[in-house]
Amino acid sequence: MRRRFAAIALALITAVAGTVTPAAATTDARARTVLGVVGQIVPGSVNRSSYLLEASYDATIRIGWTSRAIRVDSTATIRNTSGASIDRLELNTAAARLGELSLSGVSVDGAAVKATVSDQTIVVPLGGILPAGASTSVRVRYAARLRTSTTSSSWMFAKANGIINLYRWLPWVSKRVNFYRPNFGDPFVTPTSPFVRVRIVPDRRLVFATSGGRVALDGLEQVYEARNVRDFTITAAPDFVTRTTTVGATKVMGYARSAAVAARLRDEGARALGRLRSLLGAYPYSTYRVVESAGGAAMESPALSWIPYGTASSRLRYLVTHETAHQWFYSLVGSDQVKEPFTDEAAADFVTRYALGSKRGSTCSKARLDLSIYQYSRACYYEIVYIQGGNVLDWVRTQMGSTAFWTALRGYIADHRHEIVSTQTLLDALDDATPLNLARPFERRFPRIY
Image (cartoon, rainbow, N blue to C red):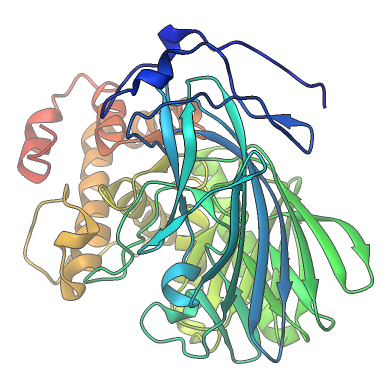
């Protein structure tokens, strides 16, 4: 990579939050080269972070099958696309809450820094200001251990039923949020990464299902790459069986510990993908993997969905279709899953039930749809956000007419690929596509927005 040395103009060093120290007045950039990447951090502080950054990741993860020991060495190359200066990074990893994470080293442009762990966030001080448009390289090394339980949220980072689950293991630029919540909402807010490269080093032969495609194999070691993803999930078992088909140009793969389950996951994945892409537009990846996970809950990831070990056959079609819908609502069009779960969960469940003809009423009282995941009870989170939210979208469809509605929804997806949008963005896209005034009825369910 060509080395780039640039003076950073004083005008770029603005205080969005906090106060810029006098040292920030210098125009001399502190340039250090790490693996060919030139740091562009300048002295000073602004007491600001952001998740609106462009980050590429290059990581090695070592996996001990019997010991359940995990060791991660990850380097993120980050460009500040937030529009304002920052002086720290906030990196998300569920290992901080579930894996007894122990940091073994954090550096910025090759210089060691004292990072701290707050809830599920690794807070990395940059040692100065990263102006808008500037780049830096951050290396994080940690050790952790997989859980053996699939209760509560443990299944995200666990080894159980002969399968390893690794969800949110890779320290990822994020918004700092609390992991624990009174329901099963997703406590993650992550921007799309243009490129992720992961080298997996297990201590025995394992079959992997990941969010990327394998590009190299050397003995036990395997290398995977992914593009335009909001996370990189890893699932593994020594005896995974795979079954494959195609839907158009997309390869659909089922992974499970038995051939019969792998074939069923493949078939349900192909069925869901075919139906949903006809409603929502092109699927964003070349491969879709439907994977038997260690247990717990079904979960979406870019290019991959988890279906828990032992799931009843009667539940498979709904679960696979719902998680497939998240390939559009979350993977392709992102949102703040903590602050506005309606944006992805209501949309995903609506299209799932529309595709399956399984619309139903809610068993909980009608409630607001504009609250965060921390404000819904476990008993009614699904019934309000998923069922009531989906029914609101279906009501909009009936008011607009199906042709106008689906055209508007496909336009919303096309216009906001790889972005992070709000609930208002979705509702306005529908309201703008009809002469009807949808804003007034929206007021009753979304008072914070309207």
